[in-house]
Structure formats: C-alpha cells, structure tokens
Amino acid sequence: MSSNTTSADVQWKGYAVTDTEKWDELKVIDFEPKKFEDYDIDIKIEYCGVCGSDVHTVTGGWEGVMLPVIPGHEITGRVVRVGPKVTEFKVGDRAGVGAQVCSCFKCVPCNTDNENYCLKMVSTYNAKYPNGDIAQGGYSTAIRAHERFVFPIPNELNLEQASPMLCAGLTVYSPLVRNGAGPGKRVGIVGIGGLGHFAIQFAKALGAEVIAFSHSPEKKDDAMKLGADEFVVTGEGFAKDMQGKVDLIICTADVSEGIPLADLLSTLSVNGRCIMVAIPDNSLPPLHSLQLIGNGAFLGGSHIGSKKEALAMLQLAAEKGVESYIEMLPMKDAGKALKGVKDNSVRYRYVLKVDIDI
Ligand SMILES: NC(=O)c1ccc[n+]([C@@H]2O[C@H](COP(=O)([O-])OP(=O)(O)OC[C@H]3O[C@@H](n4cnc5c(N)ncnc54)[C@H](OP(=O)(O)O)[C@@H]3O)[C@@H](O)[C@H]2O)c1
Ligand SMILES: [Zn+2]
Ligand SMILES: [Zn+2]
Image (cartoon, rainbow, N blue to C red):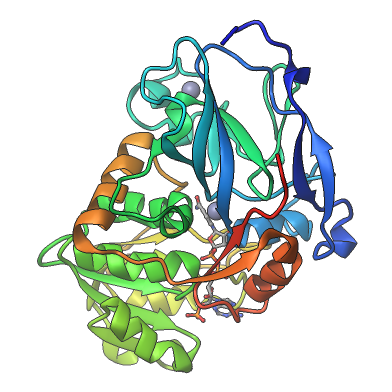
C-alpha cells in the first residue's frame, strides 16, 4: 500500500453530534480520516462502546468541543489496510483502538511507556493532528491510527466484550497496577458504572480485597457478583465506621460537588491513595489540608493507560475471565445509549454495533 496517499483517499461514515443542545440526535455524516502514513492501520469497525467521556464531550460539559463530532473510543473490528512500516498487524486481524490515536513518539513519557501522558497526545475524537487533520471516533464505519495505538484482541475475547475494555478497562487497570493493587491490599472502588464494574473485577483479578462504594443501593447484588467483598452505600455518615480501612481508592463517580471526597479520604489507611479517574464537568468539592493530613493521604489522578498496560490488561481479562456487562444496541440508537449513560440507567456499558456500510 502506498504511503503517499492523500487524506482524501477514502470517505467514511459516522454518527455525529452537530449541536450540543441536541446531543442525543446524531446524524450520519461523511468524513475523511487523517492522511494515510507508513505506520497507519485502517480498521473496519464492528463495535464501539459508549463511555461517560462521550457524554461530557457531546453535551458540551467539557469545554472546547469541535462540531461536528463523531464520538466513540472503545473500538473493535478487523484490519483492512496496513501501512508499509506496520509490523504488528496484517489485513484480517482482530484489532481495537482506545481513547488515544497518536503522540509525539519523542518525549520522555513516550519513551517510557507513558505515552498516555504525552503533552502532544491526540485523542481519538474531538481532536486535531499536528497537520490539522481531524480525528473522528468510533460511532462510525472505520478508524485509522498509528500502530502504537492499535491493540491486538486476544482470541479468548469476543470483539464486543473487548470493546469497553479499551477505554473503561484500561483506565482503571492502569492506576490499580501503578498504585500497588494486589494481595494484602484493600481497594475501594467508588462508582459502579462502566469504569467501576471493570475496576472491581480487575482489582479482584490482581488479588486485592475489594470494597465497592456506590450511591445506588440497588447495585449491591451486581457489585458482589462482580467480585466485591463488601458493598458500602455512600449515604450520610458512611465513612464513620470505615476509618483507615482502605489502602487505595479508585474514584470513578461522575459527579462534581456531590462527591463525598473528604469522607472518602478519611477511609484511607496511613499514606493511602485516592486516585481520581472520573472527570466530572465541574470542580471537585473544596478540600481543607486537614482532610489530607490526618492519615497522610495522597490525592492523585490517572489518564487512560499505555499500550503496554493495555496488552497486559487484555491478557489478564482473558486469563481471569473478566467480563464486560454489556447492553448491545444498533449504532443508530447511539443517542439512546448516550442518554442511558447520562441518567445512570445503563448496566454497565452500551456497545453499539455498526449498522451502516463503509
Ligand atoms: N481518566 C480517564 O482517562 C478517563 C477515561 C474514561 C472515562 N473517564 C471519566 O470517568 C468517569 C466515569 O465514566 P464511566 O464511563 O464509568 O461513566 P458511568 O458508566 O456513567 O459511571 C459513573 C458512575 O458514577 C456514579 N454516579 C453517577 N451520578 C452520580 C451522582 N449523582 N452521585 C454520585 N455518584 C454518581 C454512578 O455510580 P453509582 O451508581 O455506583 O454511585 C455511575 O455508575 C467520567 O467522568 C468519564 O469522563 C476518565
Ligand atoms: Zn472513555
Ligand atoms: Zn510524547
């Protein structure tokens, strides 16, 4: 395949949001992917998960949305074209793309398996490549990405099962591993949604004891089935009996002021860590230093994960039978899926099946 093809070499179709006021009314549009380069891979999409981040983007909750936007960054399908320098994939392979499609390849993060922290990273959608090409996401017929950001899908996993792992799974796996989740550690997972339902399973698969924190009492049975050892409803006074009990918290709760941050921090053991992965629309609640000092708590954050971690995560999922709890919808129902994520009714991830031709 020639490497000097221009960006207009193909036209693909995708479900786009064109107005943040009408974020659940997606329209099919044609779009051109980035210019095809030597390390690029084209994937014909079969499935795409619906992430909480899709909702923040299309509703305009996060600033800086570029319209029209085709959301979606939990993408699986089959490779249909590879650039001349691609070594890891061939046409026909099962492959996926998560929330990142490019980085600078030169900086310290890029050269230390931290490309998810590259300052020049290109997100899968609502983003521009350095040459101005627009990146559009996976509610579409196909995606083009550099091979570093394409993941092979292990044979043990169905594509629809693997899809949500490529953002939701990776986003919780990375901070679990980087912050020492394992045997002898008590890990608290806050918010049992797309990310949270994987976080319980991966924390368990890594050998930790798991405490699920939720503001939805009706999720208790599911949380226990997912592997939680304890289920705590984050109502008034919930932290009173939990002081010092948790070594690591992964917070996926998608609320701003409403998050019981001080109470959660009080549940940490000495030098325990609370890692925010949720990115609610607004700021976190104000915090007094004393709320960190009493137990020497650390408050941090984490952004998706590296390719190295994605491969390890998929392997662990295959070995330990980590399961995506999915509700499948045709891609034309993307608006319904986005609404279901926004109103917290999804159990626990929508996966859209492509229903338009390339
Ligand atoms: N850091 C990253 O790289 C990264 C990557 C992907 C996603 N994210 C972010 O992570 C967050 C979660 O994404 P997701 O796809 O897992 O979303 P999700 O499926 O909607 O899950 C979010 C969970 O937050 C809790 N929640 C929702 N409304 C709440 C409220 N009013 N009060 C308290 N808790 C509430 C719910 O859990 P309970 O019902 O159990 O309380 C819900 O299941 C989003 O902010 C998303 O943008 C970040
Ligand atoms: Zn995501
Ligand atoms: Zn870089």
